[in-house]
Image (cartoon, rainbow, N blue to C red):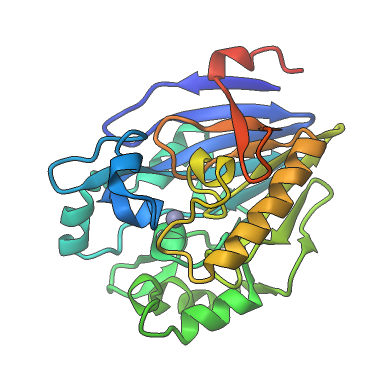
Length: 306
Ligand SMILES: [Zn+2]
């Protein structure tokens, strides 16, 4: 395992590269946004969660939008696309989201242009995970950002997004999805699926019914990009900690229990999408059945390529 840290620039977030066997895993940020802390910690009292992170004067905490570019055998697969640039000025102001083309800029610094991406996988279709799927063209029409990519999305998630309910309608946007259908770039997945020799997806419901995690395997090593199954380490360290956004909180707990034991048994590297500091780590069991502890992996400890 090897991890190289590159500098931050103008709030665009870090760009880091890990090696997993023969696969390169590039962390590509779509920036950092600020959102109400209660959303992340659900029913946990503020007196407890403010010991994890101190909110700002508007009760907001920083949320990283960490996307993942997987490079294997000449294939480039992008997992999640951040908010992108279509969001309203009002929302952008609330989120304190800075800069344009954040993800695209970070891909460019890796020498990757939008047409080089063969596959996009959305863990789910909440707007902070798929807003960058599409962008406005000169006429203000939303078009796919990655013109050659197949966009791999779970069938159940598409159903939720296209027909949202009162609780979920604010976070699903047709403009993130319909241009992919029109261009013939949508690839609908129905449950667990293998995408390449080294990359597969697992259905991990709870946050949404159609949430999927991405598993990368090479040379006997395994990593998983967790999406919002566990946005921050606390969500998998304490199974009871469930974000307020999860639509099936008890199912979230059962899914997290299953993935946590699998990750411990197989020494799977966990990659976190939203924590501002912790990118990755390995999970260990504790004396309590519903608690695990994360051995966070720092960039400079992963320099050996082993
Ligand atoms: Zn999210």
